[in-house]
Length: 485
Image 1 (spheres, rainbow, N blue to C red):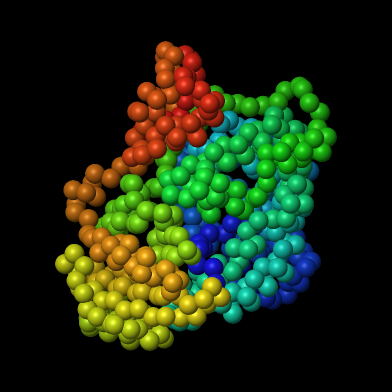
Image 2 (cartoon, rainbow, N blue to C red):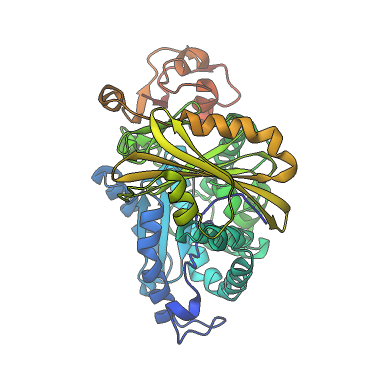
């Protein structure tokens, strides 16, 4: 069983329920346009919730809509009724649902260098829609859903809807990437749309370079090999190389020369001031500490664990297929926390060593179970914390039995690091923002990156955000650069 614990909708197809339950008259291998639109409409609210809502900055949103409209006019498929959404998420991702629903994250926009790169990403997703790639994969998604039901260990063992959904998401991850043929076709179509709209088609390839650099940085920050792919990065859902993109550009057969838009200055002007990283309303990461001002808690996550969060849960994926899920339940439970575990949250599993504990002054309980999975014997450790009379926070720790001794101290420390935030701490949390700065005099990369407000890896972040300085030690006078403040 794959315990990568990620519920993100990588492939652009969200099969939160079976196709037959969403659209009982749909035929999986041949959806009509109206059925595709219905499927997209049903899943659109789920995407919005999962990715932290819509990013509602009118300057960025209006600019994004302008770029999208240029591309749609170049497709000859405006009858599809495309709907573009800018998501308030730090993830670097873009995807499409059937029926013309296309999404791009705030994190991806921050990574782009100019308007042609954004056009390249949107053109690629439009290509997937026009070629109906997601619809063609629905039959495979249904098969994955059935597989997930068979291995939906967490949901069946602990009897919780959220964890059951997580298990379904795990099995669907093998559908995250389109085939190479589909990616090539989407690239060819996307580049063709870019060319018709007047954009420099090389923007698609240059963005992929940015994406590769970001994936390597994410790996370094998480303590993983630089060659590994970040599960929240678009490279995981759109696996292709720069060489393949250049091949797609050649195959697109668009006329070179003429007016080919980049719009770097206009792009940078419109993203100046945009939120960077986590929105404080959804929690922020400071080093290895996750802080949630709205829910008023903080927790320390072990080194080597890759952190993801949504409006309802915090997920950390670690080594050896280990993982941590932290969620909460708004419930006025008056009994002992041991009773909450044994007769409530984990009532469908036999917990060993069930005991009452105290975590930073809060009444808590813990117990563990041993279960079978496709990856062998797994240890599940549950911890429930009564935050106050109306809310209970819940940890689920997962790891293979053979690594339990090695990881137990890290997971214990995580549980005991959970504590309430003071009002002073809450008021001190400020979001990171992008600032566009014009270099007044030639200056070293080291000096400029030292002004970044990030807690670590400042120079690496500066080079990732500014592809015009990669491989250089200095930034020339007059250049525009992105810094984080």
